[in-house]
Image 1 (cartoon, helix red, strand yellow):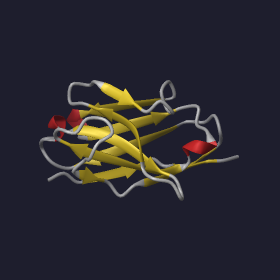
Image 2: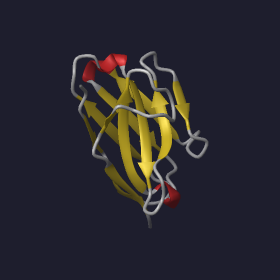
Image 3: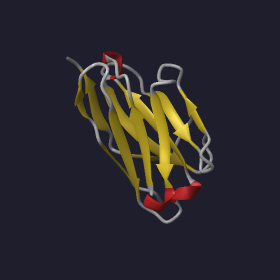
Image 4: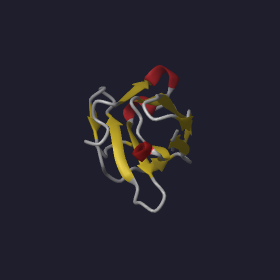
Length: 120
């Protein structure tokens, strides 16, 4: 069982940056794949990025070069650094964890989400 809690969301101007955190409970955090997803109002949830226990990463085309996913297994925490933010990045961002799902798939565990709003 893994419990996930996101933090770090907020209001930022276009071109700005935010870093989201995903704090996980459980002693086997390092064995889980961590994914970030987002859902904008009126739209379906979409995949953003994922990181494997080894550190391998994958990103959605819409965020490549602007977002960076990382993890600190010693702190049981995953991160999503978001730079050059655009209004279309506005959404509720969720972190997710799974032992085997890679990339845009079905994850077993989900956080409650954190709101990111990009607006001037």
